[in-house]
Image 1 (cartoon, rainbow, N blue to C red):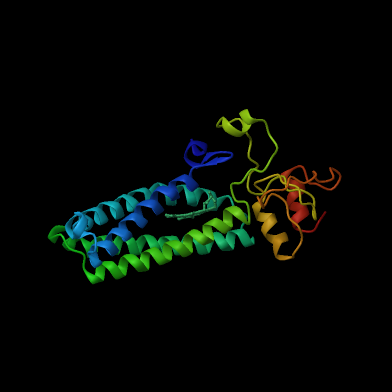
Image 2 (cartoon, rainbow, N blue to C red):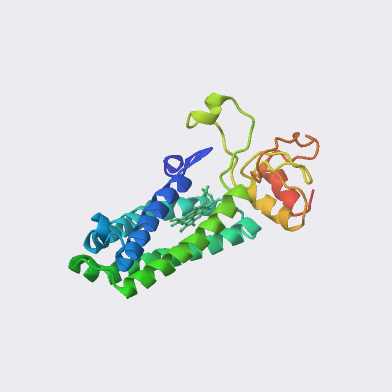
Length: 236
Ligand code: HEM
């Protein structure tokens, strides 16, 4: 059940949901701007139409923000506490909650304008502020995915495993890291990755892009959770 909500390995639910929310919010704020400056009237796009569209788009963004936040929270819970990835995820969470509150405020402020068919300055300012926060939060979320490799499975697998949901296994947040100093990818070990990352070493599973490096030496790579815990606490 949890897998269905969070998405399968290699197919996380949070990322596509964020696209829907961000798309709706962006269209909504764009409509607020265009409605306020009212330059499209000459081609038949009235302020009234834009005021209507803006509220509906922002409402859509707010509705989708519920499953988006839920799936984000589930991914957040899998990130090792104290890791740099977790710190960044905390910032991402806070900024996104603030952005969502700002969009909710925009909705409330714009509702009278929606009814009257106009865009007010207050609604416009709130919408632009919310969009700014959304951009900041999205940038932090992007770093979680593309720097720390959160929910990234970087493996040379068959096309069937890559494409068919459920065919691929994803290590849990604190499992199966590669050996210290290895640049190999294994995916999912973002907690330790983050800690190693702050030390400047080359880390594993960060989804850092294009290279498929050699696997870590088996002799040094922890293979169980207990071994891994010993590994990160320096007892190994
Ligand atoms: C409680 C709120 C949230 C938490 C805890 C959270 C957590 C996370 C985590 C852990 C990631 C890493 C990648 C992944 O899990 O797929 C992420 C990525 C991301 N999040 Fe959130 N998130 C939250 C809400 C949101 C919302 C509301 C949005 C946008 C409307 C959003 C936008 C993004 C974006 C754009 C990424 C990068 C995804 C990618 O490009 O792969 N997040 N978030």
